[in-house]
Length: 168
Figure (cartoon, rainbow, N blue to C red):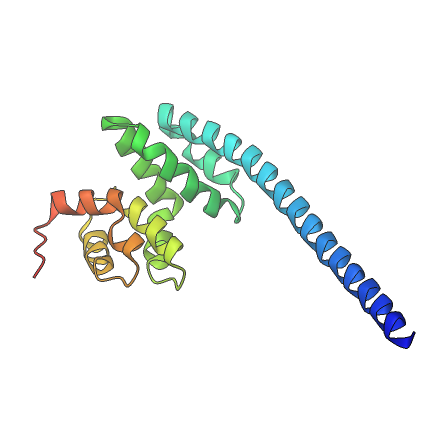
């Protein structure tokens, strides 16, 4: 009889632990969804501000004044989505805006990150800058241990068009 009581209590403990883990997962997902919705709203407002700057460059000080420190991450994502969609003068204005916002320097710093996805995102954005310092940094990413960083289509194609790459 004691054996069955033990099994009963162990089953109850496992059920309680399962419910606790399930509660933790639900709460974490709730916070993640909330952050995703908040980021999406903020990203929409940043997109409107960026497009306004592209049309009217004199609004740059107003654009900078409305930025929060945590907007840097969203701006990197925003410009990564925006740059492949624009060409010519608009692309130049977007790159200029990125430079003015300090994103070029942030991306150069992220190339040294231990997280490969940050290095890959930074390399993809930096492919739009035609500056010697950036080109040298992108050349170093070709030796990265992660294939995703080395083969980032955006930065590799941009880099190949600017420098002679030889695979020895």
